Length: 341
Image (tube, rainbow, N blue to C red; front, side):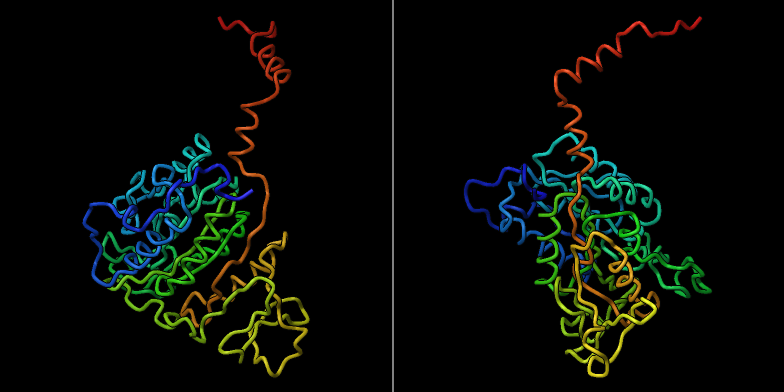
């Protein structure tokens, strides 16, 4: 079963203009959000999802203006609470494609608890986490993904925080679909989002997104598709990069390392398996991301596995067989009661 199994598709072909609202897009010039919005609006007609069956829930932040700019149903909700609200929507309506648009501050700071439990429960929602490693809307404070030592308005002597790795966090929470992409690579972004929305269960896609005003060039070394800093993850393929010159290998102690491909035994090169039930290798791959300078960054689908979703299971309980419903009713109205004086 796919993520769109119950969602009615359009009877006639759709086009991008149908997903463009009449609202003026108001982000700073050069913001990576523009690229993500354009890719999203172009993707939706390809999926064939009706606008009336598309819901976008956002929290607070620059990225959270997203619902205004897409002509569909949506809600600009409360700081950090978008996953909780989206969970309720998905639980109530299995005929909707439910998207969550959030940022590194919104999702990983005040919203951290809601995020991990939506992932743990495997709610059928697709989360786009825009990561620019800064608080942009509130004018440049360090965020949960800012590197240690980051000098900002709220950390003039340099942040002493250890940053979150959103991919490792999602894998640790038990997410069934975890991926990373980048705003400047439209083809990769579109492909990853397509896989995410077609996955039944909680999907988290981290999107490296540039903030030109408060954290410009945070991902400068990763902007080109053939950047030697990018480690493409392709299911079933050896993890090689930098034009085939480097590879991810497994050391004798079981840990992963980056080595020159021509100098290692090909059998030691890790073959990526996004569908592996055990997430430990995906977690190891996530650790290759250097939190300080991002000199190495895996990109692609880290994990994609199937397991029951919370909303499907809850609906199954509601529509329980008559004999179970009768037993429940007997319990509710039975003689085993208490009188409180």
